[in-house]
Length: 281
Image 1 (cartoon, helix red, strand yellow):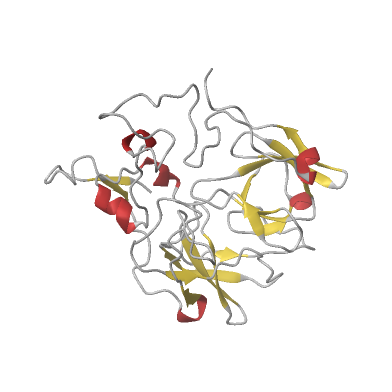
Image 2 (cartoon, rainbow, N blue to C red; image 1 turned 60 degrees about the horizontal axis):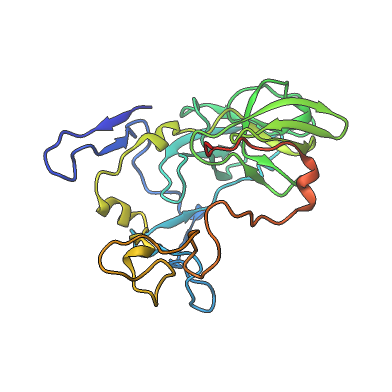
């Protein structure tokens, strides 16, 4: 998988790039596995904005993804690799021996015609696309789509290029190293899929122009200091002025940047090593 760069034929094309999707199937998604997707535009059930800078964008159908991988001991065949507008990863359409079809996250290296299998009882082959409990996966193997609660479905490492590293499995838990660098314990009877997620170059593409960003459903972000005092604590003044405060604030007047606001969770005890601090001091 590579990145395709455009010639600077227009200002919007200059510097723009896309992921080369020539290996994907150009066809409509399986009709039984799509549902209509209503746009929320960042609003809650009261119509109030709860997530800013959202709205518009191209219409989409939601592809129903099988995160549980609960077709145990039934071999499946990859019949197509497809683009999914709702996520950064690509998806694979699997047809099981009984005729049932399901979408799964496509791991890196999976090809059309490959077979995949999930099992909680057998010791199946360790290869990309196969799903099995953490206790049956050797140490040092890259995994994705990891469950936090047995049977609930994968919740960890599902976006493009992501993977976790299984370090050990002792007692009732497996020790997993997350993409962030965090090391945590997960019950070893939770399912995980072998390999890392496809489309690792997703983070390297450059949109090139504001219009591509709008097609993705994002609206513009405006600095608080460019607003009026009624709209933001940083607003007001002639032209661009300093914010006039000792410390920056959110649009709602709360302290911003560097203020701890994370509540304690019962699962904090399962974290052996915190993620690395990305901000340089």
